[in-house]
Amino acid sequence: MRIAQVAPLYESVPPKLYGGTERVVSYLTEELVRQGHEVTLFASGDSRTNARLVAGCPRALWQEPGCLETLPHHVRLVTMVVREADRFDLIHFHLDYLHFPVVGRLPCPTVTTLHGRLYPPDQEALFDAYPDVPLVSISDDQRRPIPRANWRATIYHGLPLDLHTPRDAPGTYLAFLGRISPEKGLEKAIEIARRAGMTLRVAAKIYPEERTYYEREIAPLLRASPWVEFVGEVGGAAKDAFLGGASALLFPIEWAEPFGLVMIEAIACGTPVIAFRRGSVPEVMVEGVTGFVVDNVAEAVEAVGRVSGLSRRLCRQVFAQRYGADRMARDYQAVYRNLVSEKDWTASQDGRPLNASHPTGAIPNRRVILGPVEVGRSALAS
Image (cartoon, rainbow, N blue to C red; front, side, top):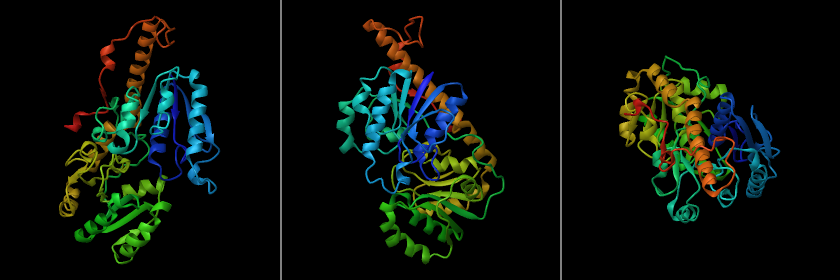
């Protein structure tokens, strides 16, 4: 299949350090190439891929000191995709909803993965205006604010199976990995570690817009907390060692996070997770196997005392079964095939030429496209 992946231009694909969406796009793109598809990646020019790369800008926009406004670059990117649309059997967008106005005029089907949280007061009218744009959610909880949107599947993120090294022996510290922002719950993590009597190592990125919050709220707390070690932003082998060497990852989020990639990064290392019951957490976690889902700091402290009883090998096994990039790519291919079949069926009814994917003109079973395609599940989810 000839597939286009359209990534945001904020970070390269994959990103140098932090950049969840760009990392997922990279893992999906490389796995689709490995499985034999002809893939074109629209991304920043400093991206690295085995697919055909079309550069939407020379360098990642957040790495360009002179870039003051990112929207013009993304408008230009959408224009580039439109100009090349005849090359593809399907276009997969990861741009939120910037491209919605052009989707209906493209010669091939599209699908859009929404990577962020949905806000009904601002977005309901948008989805009502574009009810035919096919969407993929990254968790069932992500859909909850706008359930009537055109959801075609829930597909959990996946990582390459060889990306992280499983470690059987637990470490002696708790880990926190993420942005320095109020919704990530670093203050709660510091309190959990204090009450549990353990060292907390913090690997975190500070965005410019969150610098004031860090200086006002977090920096004084770090100075007053000798049990906390701030190690800064980590990536690659350093991240692998950071997560794999921890006794547990703390994930005390204060918002409905749509997925939480760091949770599956931790269990890929065999490290269990102690996470607050918000957003996608109950979906991603297997309670009592990959860690514990808790409701408050007191429950988290109690859970810290129980993680030593969990099997790190079983944590890794759950990761391999549920969260591999190979599984993610297969799930997306099921959605792609359904959408291409739907496009061909519609073309046959209108008297237009059929897509080469169905040269016999066979009309697919329409039942497969009437409702969401539920994929990415496992018996371990029960």
